[in-house]
Image (cartoon, rainbow, N blue to C red; front, side, top):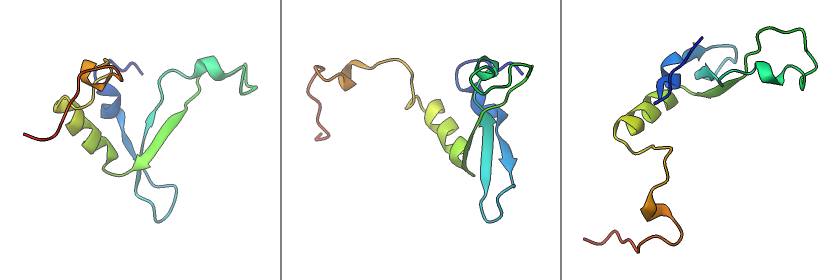
Length: 89
């Protein structure tokens, strides 16, 4: 599976129902074949490592991304030596 950058990993989420009483969703954590030696399974051609979150997490994160509230680039106002900021208008 190839997933493009820019938040598209969240488009691959799938509902998970293996734990009764928990409404979970999950998605893969990128290419994990590099871990086959560490996990002691060098013959594996596919390895899936994933993230589990409560249902609704992905929808919330996609909304924050769409509103540009999540960005992997540093923002100068969040730098420890950045400008003073206030919530007072």
